[in-house]
Length: 168
Image (cartoon, rainbow, N blue to C red):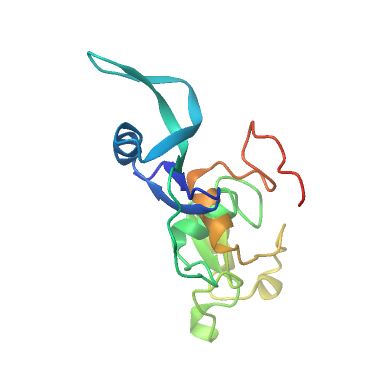
């Protein structure tokens, strides 16, 4: 399970890794813990370490520019915070606004999180044809936003508990 966000030395989101991998990076002195999980500490016979939720690499890693976040079902559910786009209840499926049978594809702007009941009720129709209204419009997250959403630390502006970065 990927549950720890990895930031570059410049605080740019890079990836998500397992808790185990994050601890190894910290113990190898390749990363520092920027945000720990509240109330959770890891213990060994010789040391105690806060369980990292966000770590930052000590050295800058050059990465190729990513123009778009890759689409995935998990990404759509995370983007919509597991809330149905039609009724607001807990979402477990992904619905195509324009059904695939009518030319709709697996894209960020054509998919929304939906509960099973609304997905079944809408069936192979557009929301207008089914008499359903979207509570919010789908959007395409940036690659950085997609990473933050996947870890669950994105509040729309900054990481929780972090001061705002002053404008340059």
